[in-house]
Image (tube, rainbow, N blue to C red):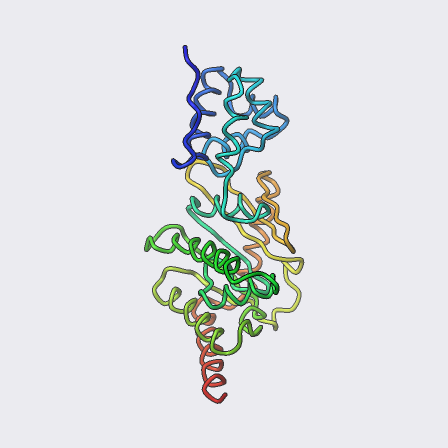
Length: 280
């Protein structure tokens, strides 16, 4: 029987590679847990590979080919499946975000990428790369705005953001940019496309003082947690670890203002920025 054909990079290669993995695993009469044991990873990780929410690394692909007898198929095709417009440390998280059914995010310093306006995103990238050409910055902004396409569906995914008050107070790009950015978030909240809460300075110490947190849930794969730092990022899929981060997020929501109070504060701060811009 002929083996599977190499994947076409233009046709959702990550999903196709995952489907081929499921097919080959089932042909080998292995469960996700059984294959995971032989690869020294969790069964949930295998499920995420099969659903396309995690990328297959070359070293894993080579071991899969060896275990399943697929004659180098996965090793040949994982490079095409891993092509991304996003930085390596964020690519997996961005691609998982695109297929998530629910996204919960705590932002300690910046407006979350999927909620940023064009001018706000441009200021952020220019601050990150002060000597980059305009073409480079344009490409980064385009990729960031493309993530906002998940907002096109009026109901999916569920989006819930907890913004530290520092996000509102830090002037990225000046008062006009901030007024526009905060009005954008408030508009999404008023249209019931986003649940947003503000964690005020008055809350004091809280459960996520160490940094940003993103939680993602899926229809056909276990949930993920994403932790991001300076040019670094890490996806967590261990069930106990993800459960702990879910508790962290619940504690943040309990310490934050209610959605109604939060929208009122966001709109008030946006209006303050608009007045400041007019005064200038």
